[in-house]
Image (cartoon, rainbow, N blue to C red; front, side, top):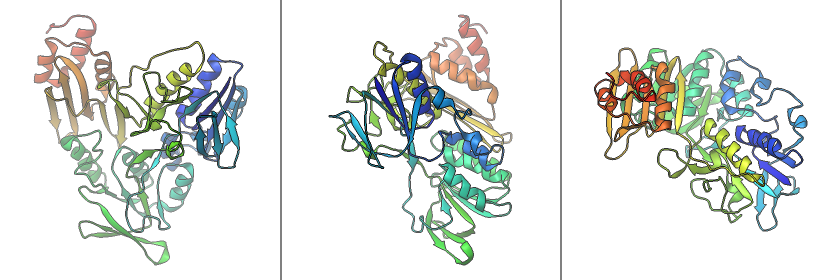
Length: 419
């Protein structure tokens, strides 16, 4: 059996290991588009702050790992897939045949339509190549403009602040991390960052970037203000890497569409990770969840189903994000924004930057978000994932959401209703 895995991020690496475990005699090839050994993008912030070197970002530390697993690692970009002949073509002109193919190509940064976005000194923070350029320019005291305060932007924010730059953040939405925090909690993160010396502009966009003399850049904002910078970083979102599959005949929507077994519209092709439009645990609908835990889970399930004689259903992943922004931990789980007809309750302590929101459907917790309350993270996820019926505890939580630990312990022990 010939397996080919396209994409050398966490999903691709985990998939090759699962394939080798289940099919010891198979031919396995891992294709990645970047020149470095497979690495974790989530480790790049640690590289930016010199906590690790480049090798510290590698997904597998032992140099002989893939050789030991008898996985052929190819560093090329896939340009097209021929689903009729079960083959793919890489940018060096090589044709590779497969019996089963996994697409785990991840995502790439979206380039915002800002004049001057391609100027020298403007970078994404997505690859190790990007990180090397940022390290050169983000010296202590340098002026840096960060475009985007979403999940990725806030991870970069932390690293830049630790590099002691003069940091300005520009976010189009009216709050920070708008896809995991509501108005109240998102703006509490903003005030926290401002107290730490970060200049944050929400409801603001960059209208243009102008190249000045001496390598400086001038960023003009929609508010009429302009900021001179040594470095501009664009972190305005990502999109799935699936252009190479556009003419393959595969069903494509927000991502590559799969069934409950992570199998695409072609029986010999599977998808996993940021490129995959997989099942959401809470809604039962299919959507792209661009988070690493989902990518790893996808990889295990997809690889298992690629091996003859194995069959496991993907029940869906809980959408979750946990973020540390300059020491303030925020988290969101499941349907954190609530559901139609559902009930919700929240606790707000702006002075201490503490926040907790619970979202219910009947007496089941379906979503939650928190700020500055790290002790509840595991409990919130556990209740949502188990779909535990809270019974009388729902009303207790509506009055005091901080009793969530009591509710968890009581309900997990089938002691619903104990005061």
